[in-house]
Length: 387
Ligand code: GDP
Ligand code: MN
Image 1 (cartoon, rainbow, N blue to C red):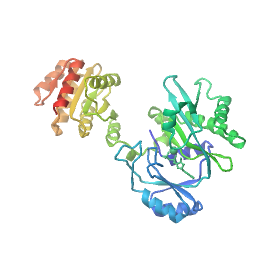
Image 2: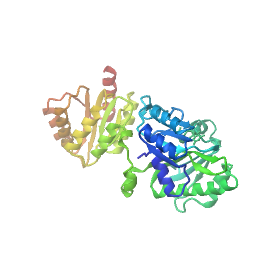
Image 3: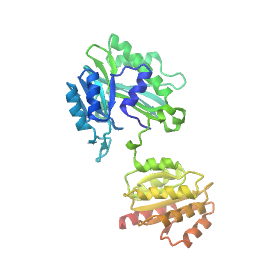
Image 4: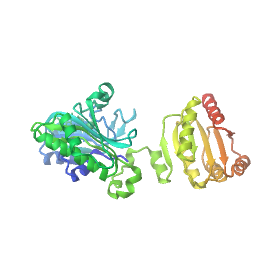
């Protein structure tokens, strides 16, 4: 789960990490009042769940409260396009009004789960700010890394080594090492999946401050953190993914044209692979789960079909615990209430496959049956081409 910058800064503040003073505003009048309270010289920052706001015109400096009000008028309600939003952009509902910081240097600090080493890794760089992706691509040697041993946690010497590598000196060195250690602690305590401070700034008077903050959380651990769960903003999420989560369906929107309904994450991934292999491309990942029933299949199918990119649907079920007849029943019921005019390719194998096939045969559905995965993928590719 993702949260907004101001929410991440609230959390970091609770752990003792220095962040600029700020307030959230959802109208330009509120923005002006906040700017007045903060002394007039402020930054107006669009709050959306995507980075790259600065380059997209979503972060603006103001010299006075009136100017802050003007910026807020421009930013609130705008459709902010960044390299992370896609071309349609994301609508800005609120801005963070923050006291302006006097920046000497912009650094980068991030913690991610490194799947190759199965451990958290801290990354730091002197080349922080808005072009960190380019730095990672063109001059990866400028990014320092420390692996956190899961058995013992981040060691003090590692934090100092990073602070040294960031070129911090005097007060800023001590603060920086403390900052890094605290961020690691906050990451673990809140079950983050990603924490990124970009930029981490050194101010004109040699203080270290988190000027931006991004925190993502492990969905599977959210039940342990009701306070964090409450920060969810579904307006920022894909509407179909939000709906799918209400039915506990594991649905992820992709950018292809074949709608896939599959049981089991492993089979879903194999299905995506084989669709690609046959020359077509999946519109989604959808795992209806191991013990699915008619109702979930019906909802899954409805969500799948509501995606306008879908040109063909592939139902690929391997009946183990899930029974093929139930899946078939769900599909038939779903189609009775939906206006579906894309071709259907169905592969049912395993428990009660014959009963399932019978239910489909007796319905007035039009569909293609495939028994083998490869055969199914080829049928889909040619169907999509024909459509
Ligand atoms: P992002 O573009 O979405 O990552 O948004 P950031 O919060 O990182 O802001 C983008 C850039 O705006 C930063 O890299 C800074 O250069 C600039 N910026 C943000 N806040 C301040 C501030 O208080 N003072 C100054 N001078 N620049 C700021
Ligand atoms: Mn940033």
